[in-house]
Amino acid sequence: MAKNITYLLGAGASANALPVINEIDSRLITFKGVLNSYIQQKQRNPTTNDLNPAAHQLFERINWLIDNTKNHLTIDTFARKLFAKNSSHNDLRSLKRVLSTFFLYEQIKFEHNAHLRTDENGVYQFKQTPDKRYDGLISSIISDTINNNALLGNIKIISWNYDTQFEQAYKEFWDFNSIYETHSALQVVPGKWIIEKGEKQEIDYSKFSLIHLNGIAGFKSIIETPSKMLIDKYQNITPQTAELLKDIILYYDEITNIENYSTSNEEATMFFNYAWESKATGHEFESPLAKTAVSTAEKIAEMTDILVVIGYTFPLFNRTVDNTLISKMNHLTKVYIQDKYPVTIQNTMQNAFERLQKPFHKGNHVEFCLSDSLNQFVLPYEI
Image (cartoon, rainbow, N blue to C red; front, side, top):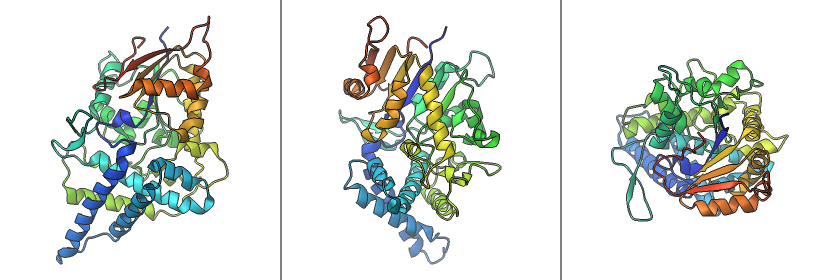
């Protein structure tokens, strides 16, 4: 019988396309500079009058976010602080809007030979759109049957990332018209298919599924027909900076001016919702779809035999959710860790989670397999 394999993804799993957590501040500064140049150019040209007033608001909010995150360990730490008090919730909404806009921009922008970062050996790393490792993973778990877009049913992905790298790679693999169209085939949670079938709709646990614990950044409307993300417009196109920024500003304007941000308004799903929000009740960010993502992940955890951790450091502000997931993995026999520093991740897991400290069956502990090779995603032998 096939083993149930669960991938647990962190920011490092999209590091070839997007900034990891400790790079967000510097990339926000770069984004601010690009936006400022666009605004200045528009203002210097008297023949154009199409500068959206939202451009100045977005610039001001980016400034605000940069200034505030200087005093916090990470931008997610700042978000957690804002969530703690009702009086800060307007600022949390603002943070989500800026980050949603920023990650949308980061996933679309592309220049040939664009310098992403320099690694510890001084080697330039170049941006991929999307991260090619997802394409490699999909090709390894695709059906052997021609024209069958199903992925192996014993594999599930639980992701802390609010990007759409996997969906983009899968979309291009099968030539879907939009990212939204991949939701049903991949059983993405939260996803458009759940809204269409009802929030109580459950995934088929015998099939592949992709769970975004923090939701997905970049949604404008998930209930429009036809539903498309801005990413779809620029697929296979090298965007001109001015055109892209005009669209990005329009996106920010639209999500800023939506009225009635509430639990009953599905437009709220344009924002990602942090998983730790689902553990608190009676607040304005309480989202049935976010709760569905966490509860679905918990059921997947209960089925898990093999856990594959990629690019995830188990930060403290996610610890409650992570502990719930790990504690439910009663069938877990092996953990694969793929990271620049896999030993550190193993130590964190064994110190943080009681489930990994106890003997498993017949006195055996859970086995750990470590890899610091980052060229392609780990494929467990049990696959």
